[in-house]
Image (cartoon, rainbow, N blue to C red):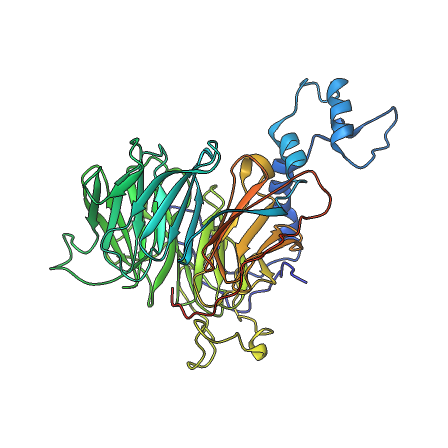
Length: 476
């Protein structure tokens, strides 16, 4: 059974850099996760206690929507309405586990899933040069069909701008393409029907000439003015869209950087995860010319495939090839790596080999993570993980794709596996939870885009014809 592990550090790190706060790699008390993370989750996803009172006296019965409605009618809270936490408590009980309904199926592996910020659009990226944008509110009709330009291997990532006017996509190339998706044109073909331009990440003030590398991850900043990207040349890039030029290159890691994101709305802090097993924190407000990270977080035993920020500038999660998700608090980061970073022998390759059973009980001697979530598998490709939406769940859950063709949902505080969605015939590389409704969409190498939702039934619906499994070898 999956569980959060409250690991104790055995090596002490240095102090964190200025600009984010200071901390040392101290031992973690067993109550830390239960205290702070649980409290924050409770504030976001549990109802006002007064709403659960259904009679006189001090006795409190288990909180249910019926009791909450009765409490609201009697105005026990004094507000006369539900708070956002009250709403989250009701909505988070209804997990998107019913179905699925097949949205689309292509003769190409699906690599990317993403709802827009308002949930009205959904982006799916496929290996063979196609990106589709669906109008969710319009019955999932294809609103934009984009033929990718100068594609190398596959579409590794795609990101919608906050205003939903532009989409950027990346492949195993230093060129990130930006497409105007705000027009009414359905078919988009490289600068023929609308803007479809390449942004060159290989040229900058500190780089002489062009260099060849691939981009694994690309994200818009909250204000839509910048892009942050993770690359196969061990670097992080920041691109200024207003100036139309590369603003920053950080030689960040000692191996491929597989995932990167902004920590919060300010855009000052960046999180990165790499095949060197490390997560790093970068603060642009106190960035020095040598490119020193504000802090390093150790704990994974193998490379990191995906990271996602909680959006508060403090917590984030990472998916690792050691078959685990870890929860991090950047206040626990070390200024540098002091303890050795144990790995499996060099002949193990996650792209085509199963994770060795002997490695499952290993533990990093300096694990700075708050919790570890296990049960899913991270093999064959860069499986992604996320926090559930703040609006509907209070970020009470963590969810992830899996190479065993499933989607897993974990409780953040208890670590319990609360759901496993089984339907696909190949690895689920990406999945996305609707920002407001109990709807989740998964995308798989079987080419299927599937929608899961809460239908009001207590028992999950069993799909009648699951797609057949197709054996392939893929590398990203």
